[in-house]
Length: 340
Image (tube, rainbow, N blue to C red):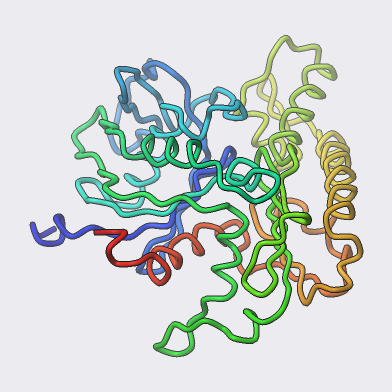
């Protein structure tokens, strides 16, 4: 890599969620890693460096192991501005090949963390998020850190709206006037939260927008509890539970055990909560032109949410809708003076 390339800031969309951290790059690459880390060194020596699956990072004097570890829970109130968050973000940037690069990024916060009930921005929370991501995170291996030089923060589900209305037409990127002119709801099913944003006439309708404390991490917790009870275990590892949720199988004592019923029950419980909140926020959606589902939870629950609205749609690669929208916001909405 030339010195000029190293010095030129690269623009990145960064959706650093509680369950997965997603990165969107200008060359079209989309990268996702589990938001999985724990405090302390890994305690693993790798026989072959090429097989390394746990990586260590230091920030503010604390060490974090990121990757194939049994991660500590991320669903705590201060996670978006924590050292654990920064270590996971740094690992995602490293996985994207951005070691040694200066990064300009847009990240997000849940709608209820970004706005107060009447629509006023929570400026202290937003500034705290910006400042946290700018702090140095040092890889504990022979790699340079990716340095975040500029950060803007927008509401997570609103990022997916930017992804929806800023579209590529051949070699051009345009604002789709038809999509801009009609009311649309975004439902973003994430790890810890499910966000709702209604946009009409390019304004956020706060009476129909907000966040529900519920997402795919609730499914994981329910499945973990079920496995512990069924097999009389004191605890189960986070990676084992993630595999069980993804595959419906838990591997215990060297054998596979079918736990699909536990996964299905946990998903149904979450879906019932989401459906009730969706009706409360959006009603029947009669006055909406489109109800757009995004987020990693949309992928996991696609069969359960298939017929909620006659005018609903699922975004292309819905888990990356926010990251793509954050990148588009950075590229086409931020003023040049803001990112200098």
